[in-house]
Image 1: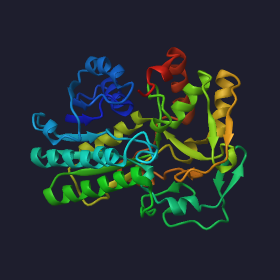
Image 2 (image 1 turned 90 degrees about the vertical axis):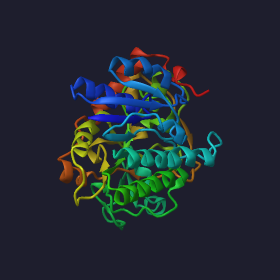
Image 3 (image 1 turned 180 degrees about the horizontal axis):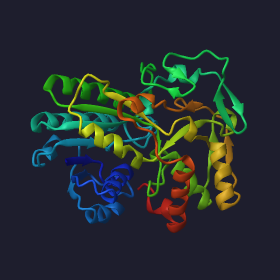
Length: 356
């Protein structure tokens, strides 16, 4: 398969390439990246070693697509991944939309012209904030859990948030940019006759992930804990009970290969991919895990609530199991241990990947 992988020098892109190579998939991959993220330069040599034809380009510039080769599929792993993007002062709202939505438009125009399929790696943050914020939860040990006797919103069950959960605004500017990209992608596929798949992912984690909270909470926490950097529990009483599921991006490969082998059909175009309830953890539980691995470290408390903070986000990936026979292959213990092993071998990783 001939693949154009955008955001190739990022954590997800590099992980996909490495695991495809290790499995002997035989794909011919062109990687596109603007190398703007701190840490992305560190992945260039690895990608070349795996045979990737690395191209320097910016998905926001339509002209950067004009000289790219014909491919069978475009996989979009390029995004500004922070839910605070556009409102935190680090990225302007216009920059966010240009990167996450205009970039998608340019990729879709490329797919339209070259008759290529398109796979968008999307996010759990397309789901509506209001019903998730209002979810009835209660402490269970060091973590929140949905109350069994509480009212459950549409598309929500004991397995988590399904694809039928509302996606109405507000969902954050970041979530809106990804939701708009999803809609645009499906419409382009329908209008111009090329296959499109939307993969909404839980929190991704693994070795080599950049040490920023917005680019991977679990990796950020583990690296920061081992390096004795400041950490805070924010919101929800400052206890760290908020819960997220954990997924290794390498576990996406079986589904990606099946998607690229399917030119269409009548099935759903949107699927959740996550670690699920079995592979979910709170910050407080993650701190306990880090303490057992690295020793004690103080975490400060900040009870102030931020506008996009939510107590419990775990995706239900039952549809992906029905469509592709997919389940996460790695347990949360395996993923966290992989990150911790990498942290011990790279003791100054947070500094290497420091912004600016």
